Length: 281
Image (tube, rainbow, N blue to C red; front, side, top):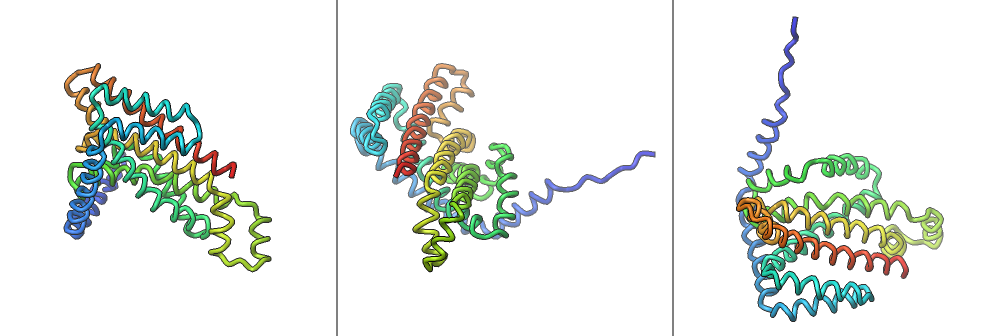
């Protein structure tokens, strides 16, 4: 005799929750989407208003000043001029704007949550399983709830990118705070420091290299997710790759992929050097 076990309606439950939230929050998400998209377009227009060679030189000098390494500045100079030569400057600027905004939101959300998880054991026990779930979920899945809330376009891409890139920022911030030597914390307590003073003057400065490693990972994940989010209208370099796939243009796809590699290497090397600088200081 076969025992038939009824299917657990997980999918229908998720759809019901999303429909409920969309029905009750659509006005707020629509307004937020309009404001955010206006800000994104303004940032992109501002970056495009500056002549490309001026912005490329400024980025290269900024990379050199931030890292104290001429090689990184030279790589940015040659790499971004190559992107401009391939006719991908506007799409690269769009990608950089989306990555910068998504990373900023990720850091502003992830670092405080990581500090809270490190300081509170209950929050830590709740947060870690959630982060495990978020990090093992396929990236494409995050595109699904973004569309009902924000529609197709840049705002939905930023929403899914923030969710995808947040876990390493939270996890490594928490790890950095927890790895502060107990002896130093006890010494701060003996001198009468309160929790806020210990956090700002002791724990965060010591944990900064680990926190910066989380920021670096968040930037790389944001860049990769912005490329994936091209399928929901994010455009940028990822949009060029997606367009090349649809039109069977391997040359165009390779050029757009090369542009993504240049941006990723530049951002990665800059953040690595900044992280090592904070460690040395």
